[in-house]
Image (cartoon, rainbow, N blue to C red; front, side, top):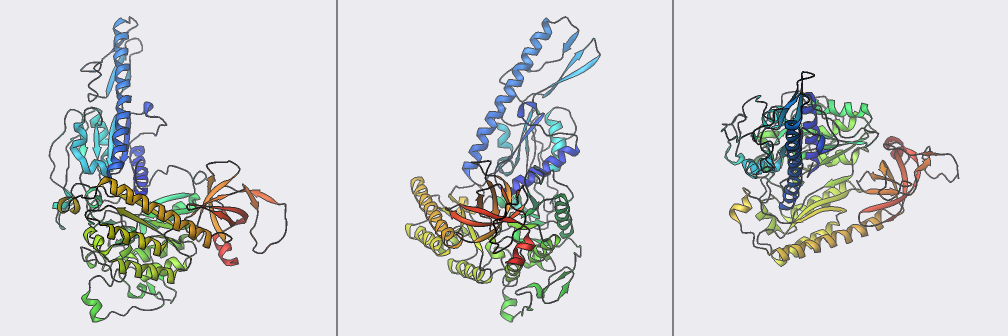
Length: 606
């Protein structure tokens, strides 16, 4: 699996679909009947890694083909009664796109022996972006499936193996050309060649809500799990391929998400991350009424749009004439806009603030995070829930992308530098202990030295604790690739990227030394540290990595406990432990354990 957390979650969906079809996971590619590569297409660098991996997998297929050739030669010389039906290119090293299932027949035991070469499939965003082009590279790939075609994988694999279990049509849909009232079904065209098969049809309603993911790790191995709540993106930022590879936004039914979270809690997971390409634009209009939600002010609701939940939970939002004239003010942070009117999907819908509130109520000991959000979708109700719920993570990811209003305009981000900074100020005022992370793209089309300096000054002002930083990589179909020139020299891009990385690390170090060293933090243990089995690793509520210089702690955390109790117990994966931060660098905190605790006890004892 390559790319984002959503891809990790999708791989768990794929594992579930294939398990139900009778497949089992194996540990090494040599033992597999099908090798599926879940891909990322967000940048050129990500795709280069995948091309390299496909070349490695082609070598495995060639090895299997050579073994089949040797088996054929041995069988022809054998008089034991075993006849192998290996024909049609089985011994041709240059042709790996032939039937992948062949049979030997043992005349003595009257049994068939299957000999296979693995099907190699490309799933996800790179498959959706390149479509049939992936199949034109001889032997690299037998199967292509887009992010909305995972239910079809058993049929596609069988077809690629030559088992003849259905049509191998390609459902190739151009997201750009689809109208809002178009149904899920698209016109298909037959493009199969040999055993190469493809399904890249994008859906307007597929969320896989009824599929129970096969988790990669049990809670005793990793205490964290992903829960996908929505798919797709409607923002259409100028640089971004996601709307074309993931399709339009659609949200899972509210009740199905709550049920999955409850199940994860019962299984022993201690942290979940709500996932979506634009996670905080969640809006469920599936028709289910949803559970009743009560705010701090005692207002009880039961689904739909609720003015009482907008703004402070204690204060009903007043809609003025000016607000009614602005289609964005009802849903977005002040000063933010989008290329679409949000009311079309959010009126009378259960929205992200309501979902976050209800998820946090499932289990007070279950830590809740969410990613990846858009800064426009941080209205006051979401900020109030983050502040008021001890088990909701206090790291907010607020992708800025640039600090220049002119670049943001070219990027079609829907806000200015000033609006973004105003939101940051609002976030810090409402959530004093918040940590903020971001995304940045440097060297976007036409970016000047002055515009780059605006990004540096924004980073100095906000002081991000973490950031994902890249130089611009043009993606076909995007607005930028069609209307702008990628005119910033590669050397300049790399120089500017190095500058923002160095600045972010410098600012993060200052923040950690100022705010973290000497503080008491609640850490969820995730495992041993990378460097020592005598040290543990975990994360704070603000999602900061912590290395704990011990694998044991007091059985119970007691603030201001000056005793030198020798009663220590081993700490385990999934334990919450109170720690004192003793040192820090830009990306990691270092700590001594104070005692095992719970979320409820830690915050109650202050």
